[in-house]
Image 1 (tube, rainbow, N blue to C red):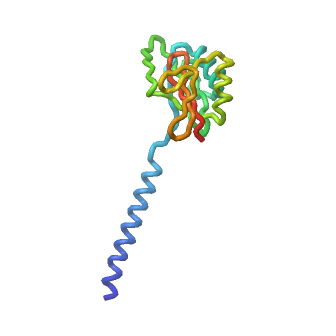
Image 2: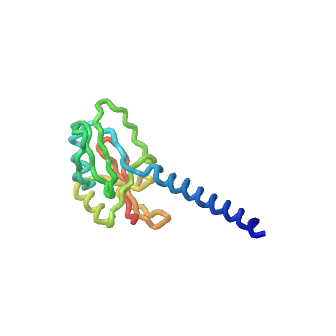
Image 3: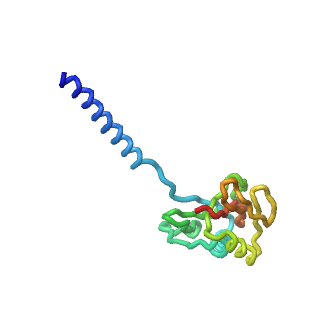
Length: 154
């Protein structure tokens, strides 16, 4: 009788170890977020926007290519700008980069001081939207029309 109980326990232990190892392997090879890339028509204009309006910090680009510039988005996340003349950029608000700030009112004041228009999701100008989850958000566009959401999510 004793052997009868041990066999199922051995199978359970084996299956548990197998499931654990598959799960651990899947977690180790699962892709994680790294960066976004925007095609831009004029690198100098775009770099000025991302530095002065979005207050992003430019970081080293190991490719050392003047047609590509990198910015930090924090936590090892990046934004890459890639200059392509005659690029067909078709802005769509549903396809946007979302960034968070600790003080959306101060950020809106910064936008106003720099004459940068913003709107809510529905297109109402100069309006901060309150989402149903309690997060405030606005939308702006970069010089090429790419949509960027700014919110106060933690």
